[in-house]
Image 1 (spheres, rainbow, N blue to C red):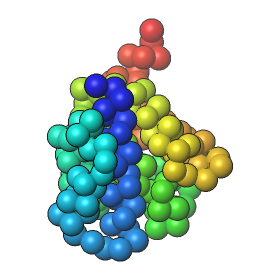
Image 2 (image 1 turned 45 degrees about the vertical axis):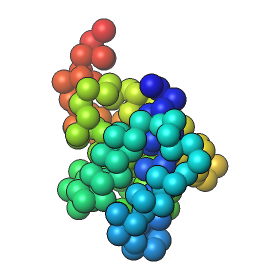
Image 3 (image 1 turned 120 degrees about the horizontal axis):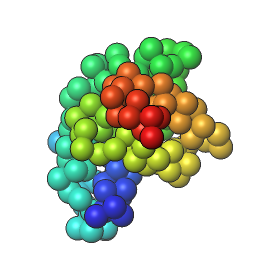
Image 4 (image 1 turned 120 degrees about the vertical axis):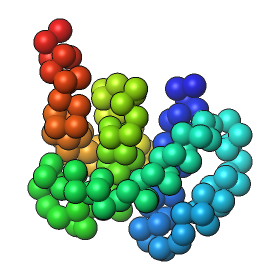
Length: 144
């Protein structure tokens, strides 16, 4: 399941990236990504939830992210922005996924798709976001 979810996140990042660059509808993007050669091997439900949820709730997710950023969200690279939206969506809507898993997955996505040191920025932003969105969980982890 872990590998299946990672690939689902990868495709969701690609879809959010596509949305930023083309403005295509979420339905069009999802249909195109479902044609990916490895789609049957991924967690399709998780992919769909992330892609649709992050695109439809982008304003709320960006408002949660902005206080953790050192610049306006519009100034982020499209890749970093897409990765951060996926992670923020999971922080907010998938509390069953441990915050450390969300951060680690986002770092791996940023390494895969982003610039040389983009993953460091993503890590720093998500550490701050975790402290506000998952305060109890972060506090419990620090206490152990």
